[in-house]
Image (cartoon, rainbow, N blue to C red; front, side, top):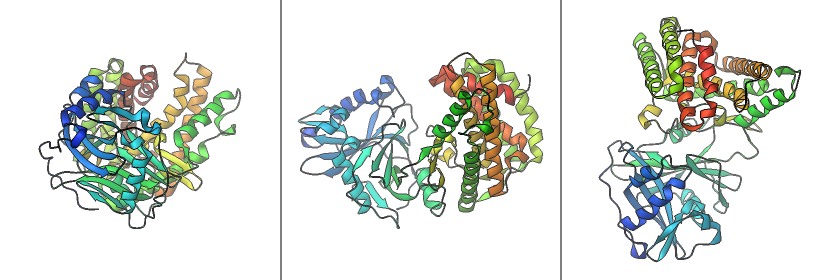
Length: 473
């Protein structure tokens, strides 16, 4: 892959449309009307109306269709952040892409090209042949073997990106929200190519000019016959709650063995990240800065989320106690996953695989690539075990017996994960209780804010965790 550049983007440019496809204004009017209904677009009509066209780049042109890349900039976003849409053009749209139509411009119909199997076939061939089309480059990994005849299908479950699966061999994830620079997921997969616990990198599609470079899509080996960690964990909880008098270790769907193996896998990924990107011991200044950030984020969220206001005195007091207690605990700083939870891992026939190293997409790219304590990832998994158990109780009145059994499941699987983690890496998070609690509390505070915006009925789950992690104010 060619080097990326860190210079700020150039002034918005476009190609002004070609032939019967109309000018930029006509196309953008159709796209702006279409955007709010897309699952990957976070805004409503007002946010879509603020979109401007940064780049309009021809990608493919055949006798049957044309394909262009649109890079769109939202008024509310940083200047180095864009949204990508691959636009397909046809005079007549075949039945399999009727649902993806955006509108009519000039004499042709434009549509979301990722839903067109003819376009996805062209994209796979471009990866196999290391193709460049204007500012769009496709490159495959040195050891990758790509069958260009594999049929492509779009996965429908994703929220923030769009993925195309080719046969049962390759999956290409198209990042809808892109930021200037190499995507952290691409960077990590390339650096950890030897690691057995991450997907195998197949290739990357990038947008590159003299002043701007971004990862548009990432191709990895597809993992058929795999199970999502969240689905496995919640099934285990459901099996437990369906039994009237059995403990977590007595139910057929006990998850503890898998939790131990998952802990080993995460620990190995952390060790490999430390080897690839370096690790250093944190100083007293690093520790002070860490608690300053955690406290500031809690104050910021507490001021905007009503459900947090009653617990803020407890949060402040707990951080005040944890900071001096953490002075005697080692703070190792390295590259981490950054957004680790049960939904980011897959159980394959060979073991656990850790996915999606891009970090939280809403955070700036530089922040997502920063080094942190590996305990932050561990805390994310601890919170995910808690969610897996208690989300099943969120819909109705709290049943004390069922809550006790869910708590038993959480404790058992947390310990199993930590046992596996410690056995694999020699780093036992339980030897750093103050730092571990601080990271877990930070995650729970963030979760309350998230649920406030998206699932108010689930606010009680992280609020209960805050009560457990803090002391009276």
